Structures are given as C-alpha cells and as structure tokens.
Length: 144
Image (cartoon, rainbow, N blue to C red; front, side, top):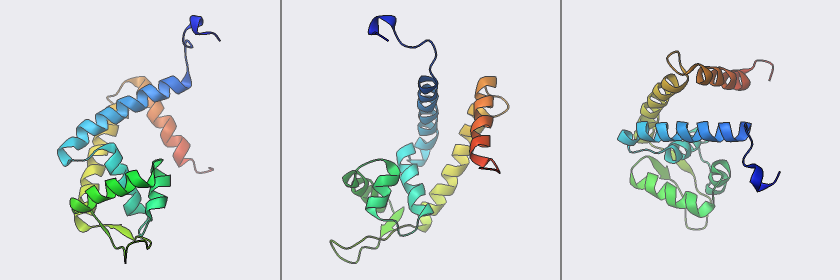
C-alpha cells in the first residue's frame, strides 16, 4: 500500500491503540488524586505481586530499562511506598511494598474499578461494553 492511499479504513491495531490511549488518560486522571500514574501503579503492582523482585525483572515486566526502574523505585522508596532491602551496593535487591504502599494499592484498585465501570460497564457505549466482555472472556476463559 502506498502512502497516497492513506491509512487503512479499519484496523484492529489502530482501534485498540486508540481505546488504550483513552483508557490510560481516564485512569491517569482518576489516579491523580492518589498521586499515582498508570506507570507507577503498574510498577507498584509488579512489586506487590512478586515479592523480592529484582530491578532486572521489573524492567522486563515493565518493558523499560533497568535505569528507568531504578529511578522510579527511588521515587517509590522516597514516598514510603516500597522498601529496597539491598544488603550492599552491587548485590541483588529485594524490593517489597510497605504497608503504606499496600493501602495505596487498595485505594487504586477501587479507582480502577470505577473507571472500568464507567468505560465498560452497563452505562458505557454498547461497543465498549462488548469490548470489555470480550477481554474479560479472553482472560478468564476456563478452557484457556
């Protein structure tokens, strides 16, 4: 296809990307009062979900660099949301969520549920409702 023909009339990739950006914007706006972003929430969730996770593993899970993760974790440590139990420089880290971080995750979970309901629940656009049901089924399929 040449550039003169323009973009495809319909593309699953473009539709998913457009919806993802809308969801991310809605989530970031809803998480802002908690002083969280989608990225920080994801990192905090990874740390909570994998106790003792390493910086390298966090980078792989987040799709980012180890340096970026180090920086982000420093911010979470400074905020009192996680602790890094590094024995000494150069040794493997043991990063874990603090009680404050766990409380914030719970509050964020409630915010995410509200955004999910608004974007994909009974009052949402019918197409978005179908997308929400399809995604739920794809990831909660008993046979998969």
